[in-house]
Amino acid sequence: MPRGGQGGEGLSRRGPRTLERRRRRPLDPDRLVDAAMRVMEAEGLAALNARTLAAHLEVAPSALYKHLPGMDALLDLVLDRVLGQFDVDVDAELGWRQQVEVLAHRLRGVLQKHPGLAGVLSGRDPLGANSDRMADAFARPLVRAGFPGPEAGHAWYAVVHYVIGFEATFAVDGTNLERAVDPQARQQVHERFAALDGERFPALRQLGRHIWMPVLDERFAYGLALLLDGLALRAPLPGVGDTGGTAQG
Image (cartoon, rainbow, N blue to C red):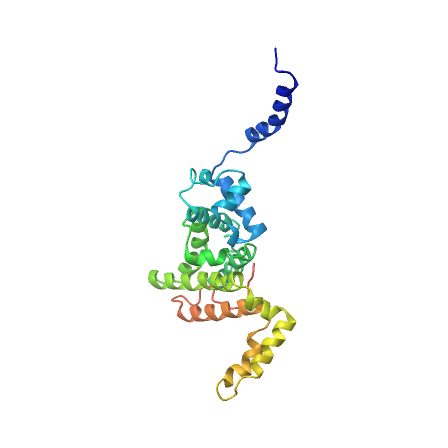
C-alpha cells in the first residue's frame, strides 16, 4: 500500500524540479559561453568568475572544470564567439585602403557591443576559427597592396591593435570618457587646464580643452586616416586601390 498523502506530497514537491533538471541542457562549452555572455551583459566583464558563472548555471563551481581547464580557456571561447559577429566580407571593387577602413570600423562596432572585451583581446588572441577569419580579412588587403611578409605583419598589427586599443581605452576605464561626455565634468577639466601655469605647461594650457571633448567617432576616424596615410606612402603597389577617401561599412 502506498505511503499515504505524505509520500504523494513529497513526490509532487520534488517532481517539477526533477523534471526541470532532466529538461535542462547538459553542460558543455557552448552552454558555458552562453552563460558567460549573459553574465557580462548583465553585470560586466569584471563579474565573470567561476562562482558567478556557476550561480547562473545553478551548478557547483567544480562542475565547470569538467568541461574547461580554467577561466582563461572560457575567455578564449567568449572572445572567439564575439569575433564571430565580425563581418569579413568586403566589396572586392574597393581599394586595399578602403577595405581596411571598412574592416576597422566593423571591428570597433563589434567591440563596442561588448564593453571590456577589447581590453582582454589586447592581451590574448583566442586563436579560434572566428579569430582566424578576422585576422585573414585584415591581412588580405595588405597582401593585395604588395607589402612583403615582415612589413605586412607590422601593418596588420598596427591597424588591428589601433582598433582594439582605442576601444579598450574607454571600455576598461570610463573616467576619461565621463570627463569628456558629462558637461559639468568637462567644464571642470577645462577650467583646470586654463588655470595651469602658462610657463610650465604652455601647450597643455592652450590645448587641454580640445583634448577632452566628446568626439570619439571623429577621433577614431582621424587616427585611422593618419595610420592609413602612412601605410599608403609605404605600400609597394601604391596604385592598387590607393584612392583615399572614406568607406565605412
